[in-house]
Structure formats: structure tokens, C-alpha cells
Length: 168
Image (cartoon, rainbow, N blue to C red):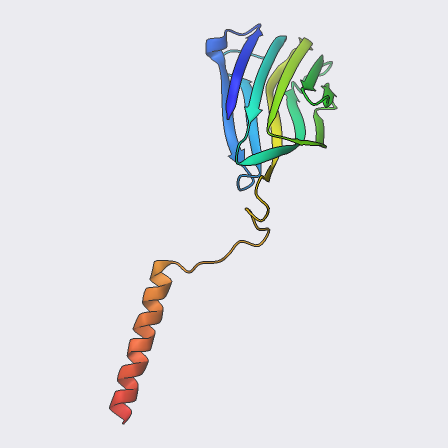
């Protein structure tokens, strides 16, 4: 669950998109913060959120940013998590993690961008999950045939039965 979201910065909050996604077959929560296409770059902002998971535990964190690729791009993006994990991102060093953390059900993240020039086009936070119940997720999924596969099998067996009756 994504909660306690707050944002303040150079772009009007109405023009900042915050997307919450499940990724990697439910093994990761992602929060993506990005200005809308007509809003320009984020040059300074503060963003915080809390991720709480009851079905899984957060066991790792990662962060990435998309600084402008313009020559002379500058800025410092600081990502701090309630467990003490921190990432300092800048142009040319735009990824942090994944870093393992102590098993927890809730993590609060605070992100600050200072002096982005020309700025950042997006920030992505990744929360790596592990199921709470032992064996709740298997590395090898159980393969279950589709209903049409069962239908084809039944038709094939019926055909073999008819052929056998005609022969005898």
C-alpha cells in the first residue's frame, strides 16, 4: 500500500505524475515520479512516501533518476529511507542499489533534489519484496493447462476410441 505521499517543488503538483506499479511478477513495488511532458524538468523538490505491505515484507531498496543529458548537467538527488539506507544520485551516477535491508513491512522514503540544472525528468523508487508466508511464492510456477488444452485432449481421446471401435 502506498500512503503518506507528499510533494513540493518547482513544478505545480497538478502537473507531476506519480505512478505506483507492481513489477517482476509481484516481487517489486515501484513508485515513479515524473513531470508531465509540458511541465519541464524538476529542478528542486521534496517528495516523501510510505510503502506498507501486509502480504510481503520489504527486503531491499533501489533508486534511479533520469537527469538531463545536456552538457554540464548538475544536481544532487538524495534518497533517504526509514531503515537508514541512503542513495546520493547525480548526473552520471543515476542509480543506487539494490541494497538489502532488514525484513520490514513498512518503509518511509524521503527524496530531495537540490540545484538540478537543467533538472531531472523522472525518479523511480523500487521496493523489493519477499512473501510473508514460507513457500507462498515458488521460484518454479506450477503449470496448469488451459481449458482449450483439456478440450483438445478430450477430442483426441474420443477420436482414438472411435477408431478402436471401427477396427474391432
